Image 1 (cartoon, rainbow, N blue to C red):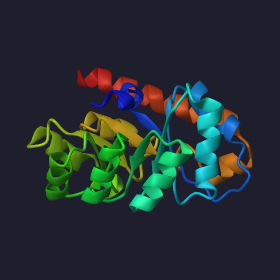
Image 2 (image 1 turned 45 degrees about the horizontal axis):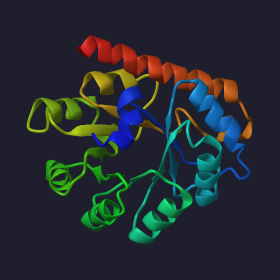
Image 3 (image 1 turned 90 degrees about the horizontal axis):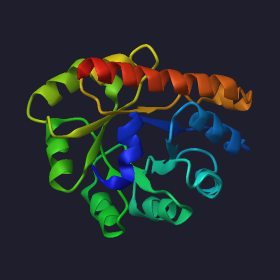
Image 4 (image 1 turned 120 degrees about the vertical axis):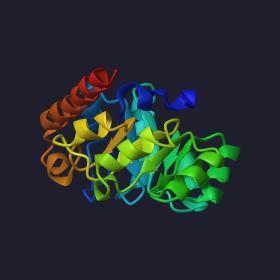
Length: 217
């Protein structure tokens, strides 16, 4: 794995911030995630003030978190995210142009894939990690078949529908990383500033991954 993405492999968790809430207390939100053990955060580009949030997180928590930008659909968005301080990029789809664009700028890029053909194309074009999306549409068994079959060398980040109740199943089935959005950071928790619950959820996800990984060894 690219050394810059080691926090993702270490905890196996990427917190996805996708919000419509304005004036987010981003420092408190990041603190609650970090204190819960999460050190990789992705700000979705369809979040209100996404660029401002990325800049704020980078300025505030530069040494605390690995910071990514998600829902990157084109090179203009990719460049804006990089300029704002994103350290890795994520898309919901496979776009070879985006892979090459990011490679030239030495920014790790995680493309969205679903089919075996997309997985192979992403790997052959330099992707070190692929985002299996939407994971909930296929379930943990799909990952198990992929990892136990022709794609044992692929690093999979499962995203879409991951919750506290199914996270263990995805890790045990072979997912290396979980991208978690609403089950970890959602509109109500943020608007209510319920940071203790965010921290509690983060800690629970971290413990689930640790436990599932240990049973896989």
